[in-house]
Image (cartoon, rainbow, N blue to C red; front, side):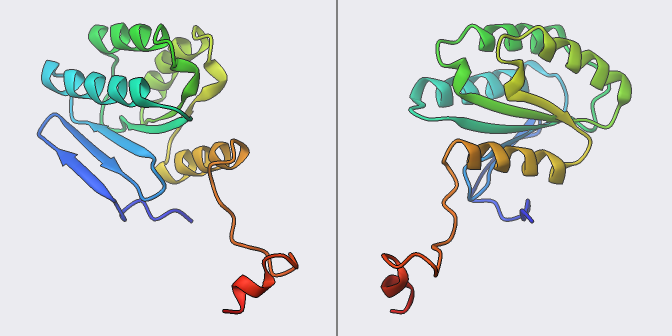
Length: 156
């Protein structure tokens, strides 16, 4: 199971907390829909996409929010138009069923809708992203002891 508390790096302010887990998953926790938080979110994700040479993975922890902001919707549209948007896998973690319906509608309008999901727990969200990382060859499984070419490495 993923330890969500073992963060590699954090960038916290009162509007948005950004944590980077050891496996590279970025966790964005929006405190509210403030311009400062949305700007920081947009800057972080845009920079990650601009610099991406492989898939990127994000969790949006929105459990304490109960609506979508027009600016958040605008950013989602802008993100979809990014030339590397197909490299992004993301999950929204929500508490409100009403918000889940709104977010689901936004996701279903996207060309890369299969890269986005909604969950109601951080653990389920992380598990889905880890499966995507594995499918994309970005998780290195431990070496197998049945691999004769690697067995001498394991015995050192």
